[in-house]
Length: 114
Length: 114
DNA sequence: GCTTGACTTGGAGTACGCTCCAGGTTTTAT
DNA sequence: ATAAAACCTGGAGCGTACTCCAAGTCAAGC
Image 1 (spheres, each protein chain N blue to C red):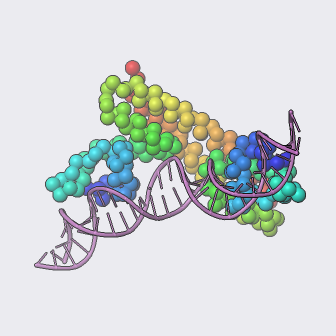
Image 2: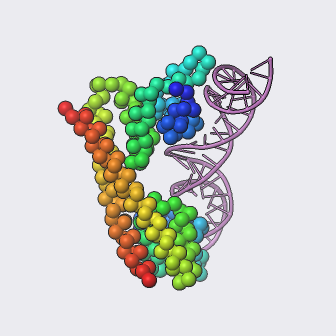
Image 3: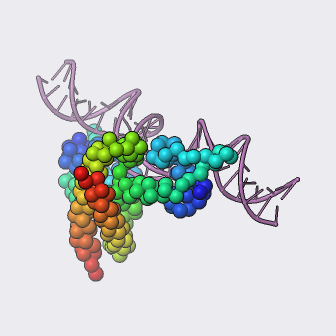
């Protein structure tokens, strides 16, 4: 699969895919004899997971840390789990915060009732 | 109250307060004879509300729109209510999205179980 | 009275995460 | 065979939201 198709299937732009590779968020892609990137289907799962991390506001630096640990493999298992557990706490806190604000917003809107 | 005290009490930096005034998010503050800003307590409620909007990811442009409508007063009542209702939908959507990701994260972490 | 700290302004600089450009090569469709 | 579309690289530029700097004025404590 070439970069254009991966862009379509992943929802990211080709520019973004190259950028992610450059910074190390995506593994260096195999190039064909022409020099064009040739992706395997399996990259899609990783990109989707990165998207979840991004949606939940994980900064790129932290994703990068996770990506590096993942590249090392088994010995980093516990560290990866810890990283995700810490992140899960951020997400839980964020949801609670948004819910509090939602309640306040409800009250504010009620004050605008006709 | 001078800007340093407002900074402490609001949790924003003095730089940020000046920046907010410059772009129109805070009303132009009265200056004493020395030229120093002299704030009224009442500004704290507005800053707190702006904080809620920020926490819920409202972009500054939109806060600015709300601030402008508010400055006009009564005739913009419905437009302000609409703006907040639209924003409330964003917040609800965002909470749902985070909850979905949280479930996926739980599953991922479960996969790291010893 | 004088030093230290807080305040003023206009404008420059920063961090993050992309997003695009230039100039060139390769692939694909006709 | 050729033209259009897609790809490559290194590096520049952009949008958002601050954050800080320089140079100067003002205020408060000793």
